[in-house]
Image (cartoon, rainbow, N blue to C red; front, side):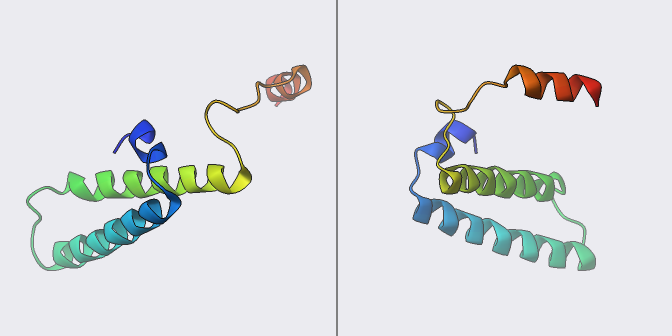
Length: 83
């Protein structure tokens, strides 16, 4: 799932999708302990999709969006250069 697709969803839809993916991840992990998976990379994909969904929920909770993101200030850039 891409970030722009996720941003079109409502918060409730995102939460429902997270729940579905977490359940699927649980089932795959459980099955992987007993038998080889057809597509073991699916676990990685699910984990990353969950992270994307939760990131966008967090952005919404903070009242941010991609268009409203603040550019880095000179002080922030200076701190990041100095470590």
